[in-house]
Length: 168
Length: 135
Image (cartoon, rainbow over all chains, first blue to last red; front, side, top):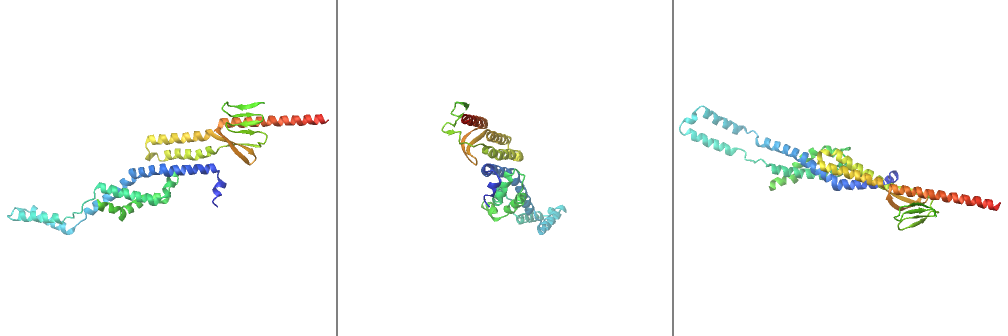
């Protein structure tokens, strides 16, 4: 069974395939992976993470919003001109600010390292499919390569990569 | 003794002997002469692969990387086309005796063919002579 390729194809052709395979694994594939990561995958992943982070920080808080609106009404109606009220309103604003979610947005550096980790992990998972994709010069696109961006997003939320942000 | 090929660097074909730098081979037992193109097959896969890679992944490569890959692919193809080997021996039991450029290999092959044909012609003449002498 294993000698079938040697019967079908000239040994020199198979030797050429072996050389090209080695060149692909050792030289071409690392270039493609690093460039894909730099140019497309990491920026895409960072954009998604940034979008999610922003959405999380600006989560609506009905109680806080109602209190703020009440303070604004006091100010607009001139109640803050009354002695003692102005100080109370300022204090109220301070208390409300203190209630604001103080969850810091993760910096772009943290995003970059999480995304780099996610991309690296995803490439590890894809394995030989990537080699095939590179060796075939994009004529064969395996399913795992088509779903690479989804895999990266899921890895970006995995504990392996989010531990990085916790450490920083 | 007739010389059919001599490149003055140790390669020669006479009417009885095929000589390389380190080996002399009698022409009489040679039944089959083959030109091996293994380097061509190997270079076709590697060279075409590199050129296609440079073309298909142009969006991820710098221009100088593309140029290097194209040049390397072309050089591999040219080298694969130019290099060949000569196999001589019994039918289906040929052995590689020489690696050289395809042009040299083809010249030697033609020289061996001429020498063999000349030898066959001589043998035929001898037989006819023998038959004549028997008469």
